[in-house]
Image (tube, rainbow, N blue to C red):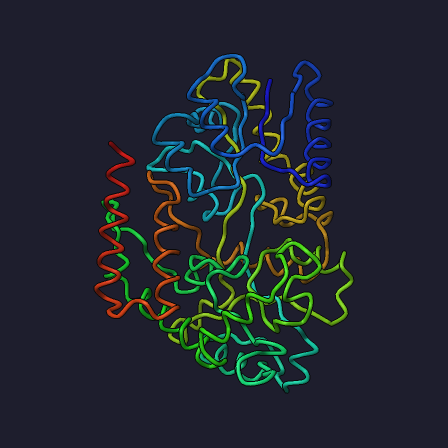
Length: 405
């Protein structure tokens, strides 16, 4: 039986292989051939072609594509397998994770660890600026960002409080937009960004964050001096950012790099009129499913079930690659990494207001369209926001129709 996945770093591949070894010990009659560093495009091509070379079990880092996998039938519906083996999904997985692994009632994937996004902050910089705790609302966020910003000359910086630039590392607009709890689509699948009040508040707030620290142009010049996201020249690690949006994996990197400042993790701030939702965040993760062309679907289900629902396995894998566990039982396990900064992301995952992107038949193209629009907006190239958003809705709807045709 073949299992294809996207993990490529040596430590991650080692963790995947250890997981397969544990599975094979439990199922000595099932042999698994594991292949890593496989993209969604490669998987899709293989599944369309079918045959003996195609994988049986597949995984993806791109939750945006689940709508396509379910709608096209390329990944099989897992509900019959769960019913047969007594897996009660609502009792096993948090609702947000079930939402992004299904489409229109077809549960064609299950969560295989999750990613939650929060705010890393430099405690030393906070102490220096006289800020006693992380900001919780957007108005507090803007004040803290301005207070933490240290200029260097007229158009540069020693440090920026928070970089709202949508091109920075993990800062794509959907991450921060989740703090507003937006609805991207109407019930019939029509894009509604121009009708959504949150869209306007989100975009205007991002611009106000930039203006509070010198404006987009100066911030953009500073961003271009930053090192690679995954290197020791990461801008948060080197002290160029005092607050930074990122996922749970960053903590392990900061530890490994022996960051020379004290740091903490908190949820990202929320809009002032939604202060009661503080603790929420953007959620995504890895998903796993069974290829429609697999001739070993019962064995494939055993592997999917083991990887996604076996508590010890989920805990071991989460600890090994520093991702957030994707089941209630694993989140409560005493064997889980006890670092309170890591556990902040568990709370974000379990927060009832946390949001994942909605599944769509056009995959992630609606997010790409939003990104392109947001790049133009933050750079001041959208003269009329409402008209611009109406055109964005039209583009997304057109892409959706093309995907269905």
